[in-house]
Length: 115
Length: 117
Image 1 (spheres, rainbow over the protein chains, first blue to last red):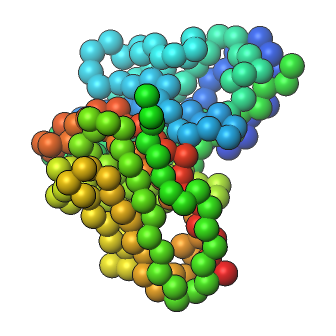
Image 2: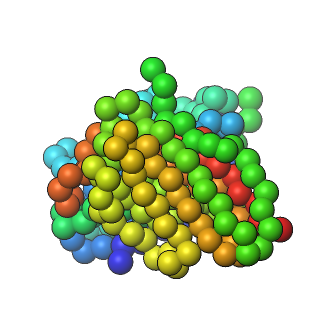
Image 3: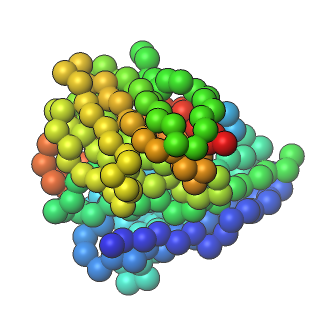
């Protein structure tokens, strides 16, 4: 069964700092990869996704993620964070084929951006 | 446009009781999935339904059951509640899911927070 590891549980950054959140998955086959975000008091929403093609994926609000197959990683990046990026971020994976819509989530990283 | 709606938003039950949670997907979405999110953890997959058929089940006991209605809304039932069932239950809908690996973006509701005393 696939699993997802997020290395940082709580990250505190000042505004304008650069962000990188780590995500590793364990599954040897074809995967689809996602980052979801949950802003305070709001529901989970999709930030970006990778299905195939260019391993550098751009999402909403200036976020991007790079799929490195050899490292089983899908790290999330943003060059300059804003206070409004304060949220919890979840990395997630689903099998590329042969499976239903089971999404396996990581444990999440809480990002706090200090003005 | 209305997003995924869930009810109730909060509820408190005692051990041994039964609970029913409800979900209305986004209009036009035929797939509904249920997730359990325990405090400090990521959501865990419970069920997926597409066109009223169960398409997948996570590693949850038989006390958990679900169904999808002709209008694509869904209910999650949990019997014989345990303290460990206390969690946020999330419903997600999507347009796709007819075939294995046929995956579309999930749209989540705000969840039903269940507390078991």
